[in-house]
Image 1 (tube, protein in one colour):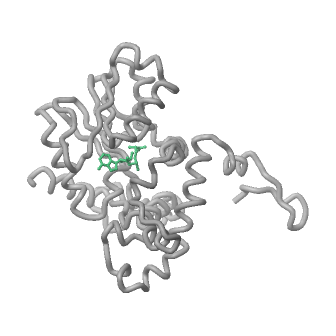
Image 2 (cartoon, rainbow, N blue to C red; image 1 turned 90 degrees about the horizontal axis):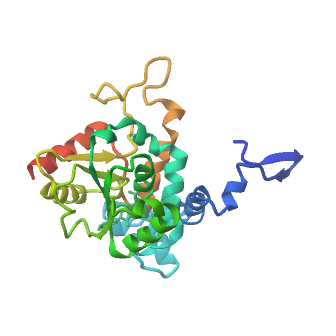
Image 3 (cartoon, helix red, strand yellow; image 1 turned 30 degrees about the vertical axis):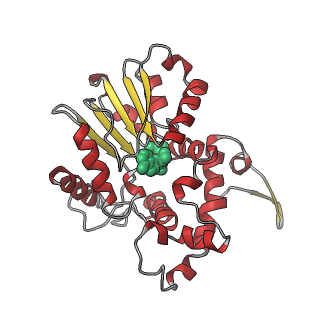
Length: 282
Ligand SMILES: C[S@@+](CC[C@H](N)C(=O)[O-])C[C@H]1O[C@@H](n2cnc3c(N)ncnc32)[C@H](O)[C@@H]1O
């Protein structure tokens, strides 16, 4: 794919692309997470799929990741394991790589005054948001240890946004508690895809308790295309393959990553709509 350059037969050299693999950039952190962690989980997929305890389970603690770590004698949960800076900087890198910040240009943020970033990580979304829309009052919410890391990241990367108290950091376990109430937008990016079953309904029900009549919940996920989609967006026009062919590679790759890491998955627009409907009446 042009990552390395063959300078003579069987002799390869780095390029500006391959140097990202070893760089300390946010994209480098993302690549490192995939090459060191996720590939290890992928490597035991066959074994886990033929193991009676793991093969048919949809539990988070029966993901290929758990199978791989048990072999190494480790039992840490995913969220314990990814407390390190590499994962959270990697999420910033991921956002840069897949162009997730496009949402900054495609939502009417000028018409909004307050945003809660739920499961914010270290601010991969909310720091660029604050820089582009300084009028916004932003609340970052994540697990206590991560929210401390978020504060440090904001002090480093967006100190100007902290000057006028437009940003607050409030620890939250989104299964146990309710986010800060009465804000305009409740934004969840790369959160629903971390959970395989009923958990996402529980998260959204807790968000609903915080919402007022003018609040909106925004779910930002990578969407899978299936030719059975009924949303009018999911089927590619001819002569493309109905699922957009190689154009969907990133989505399928991410779907597999969620399976290997958490027994979770990406979803179609229709599946996301159902999750929203279930949470709205639960
Ligand atoms: C895949 S990361 C997404 C981070 C960020 N939203 C983004 O798109 O870059 C998932 C985030 O959910 C947080 N998280 C996991 N379990 C949580 C819980 N029970 N309560 C609150 N946050 C949680 C993690 O700490 C992590 O920051």
